Length: 116
Image (tube, rainbow, N blue to C red):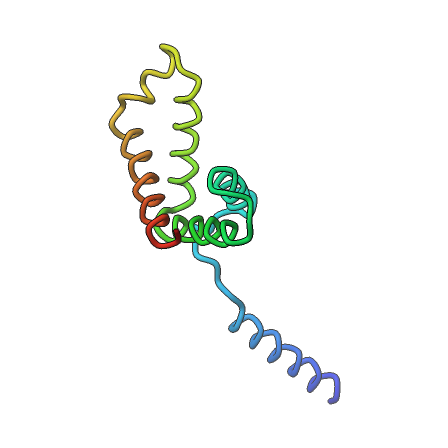
């Protein structure tokens, strides 16, 4: 009888923990992506605690505005563009790819306005 009561108590506790656990949004960015953004932001804006807070705020705002898949696609497009040459011409003129980069830049501007 005691074992049944103990099992019921454990089941109730587990259910309560599951209900109160934090649900991450489906577009939550991986920690490494957030860290990469913050490191690059700090290299551009300064290496102090105040800038760290602003850069962390910035990536949080971008994550709230743009799903990670779109952010990753835009980062890839911009990375390929830096290589230059004829083979990357499509990345500079193909409308759907341009739109992905524009969406990311809009999110960055919005984040900068909110955090800096």
